[in-house]
View (cartoon, rainbow, N blue to C red):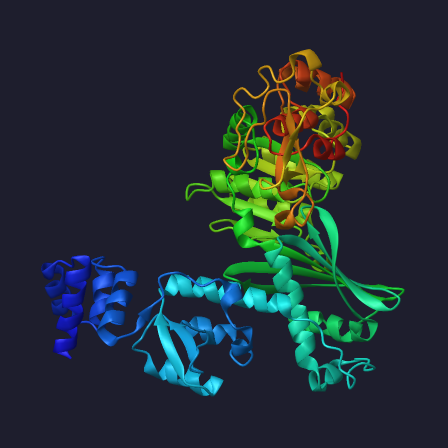
Length: 582
């Protein structure tokens, strides 16, 4: 045993310059800890895992996998009887058949002989091993199973073709349950891979249609025989903890899964239709929401104002826009910015989409009369510094939010209006006194989401004078000073003077010309002039004109600056924004 230790140490010293002092230190520590020498050296930062595996490969006559194989190279048939949980837990992956008929298996621990023997037994074949670092191996496992999920199609089995699944017993006992489970899993895996925000499973006359919403646009992706509808619906209901026997009433549930190394929460909603039940699944990627304000598309001026608004000790900051315009992401980014141990932050949401560390979040529950107003009223007895209300829908909620802001609390919330100035008149229309609106409101942020141009296929073109006029710029002075001070992503290149980019389409972006989305913003800071106009019940258009004279950038103006910067296209901005006041 000592000889093996010295041998591996000699190899590490010869190949990677391991310090003999570090080697002796690890040997001494090993006496008191139940760890292998290599593990001890890695723990002491004396060597890397890659260096250890290369040394072990030399010591034991094994092969070290220097280049990570592509997932397409892995033989998927070898994974039919081995689960992804088993492979990830044991850090092992069968790769492909060798010329001698053996199977090459990647492992990160060549000393785990029992795992290698178990894999050989499961595959009923002799195996040979290659060494790979655990991080690279785990990434390859995730990519391979994502590819495997993509390849799964619902098989038309004659024994199953005419089965109508009516209740729980049939679902559990049905002969061909596995294809349904694989098919539903493939739907979810593919949706996560394609960055879909929603999955729609819809019954038609003769078939079940699956559509994904990607970057705000619906795409038809899969079809299944109508006979499978009941089984598919039942499978999703079981995953979401819903009552599969209840088919007459809408239901809501939740699924949480780890997909390819990402934590995905899914909100499930069912509703009965004339052609059968349909299901909508909203995918909530935990990694996509925890963004900074600087990462979601704010221009420098708006970013500075927004930072100031959310740092104030009291007052109300409202975010407006239609459903799906990114309001929740902006509110969470704001909370992350100001979250600290010195602040007590409470939120009431419908529903709680993402759980934020260090913040107490409450979900609205109409069944027990826990409304926005009831939760907000209770919050004031918990000594909060910052309160977030998911939405101000009625007079009661609005009045409590205003009272909270006037008694020394910062309140963040949303309302549904088309632009920033409309939020002031919306509160007054609810019944809130104008002097309360003007005295409590600090700022209003209107926003939309626009699709970003695919960086691989976008093309340059010269817009016509009519298009330039539509953008709100003077054709004779196009591009003069318009980009000054505006941030441009590293992924995008500013087009030549007098030109902009437009969508083209390629395989990478599903031939849409777009990939991903960013925000466009209209941020109105409430100053004395705006407060005075609000007190007089001046209409929203006049308030907006006053704000524009003071430097307000409208949604369309912000969008066009992003189009000039090469981030999005003119047509996309025109699609999601209304014509500005002049």
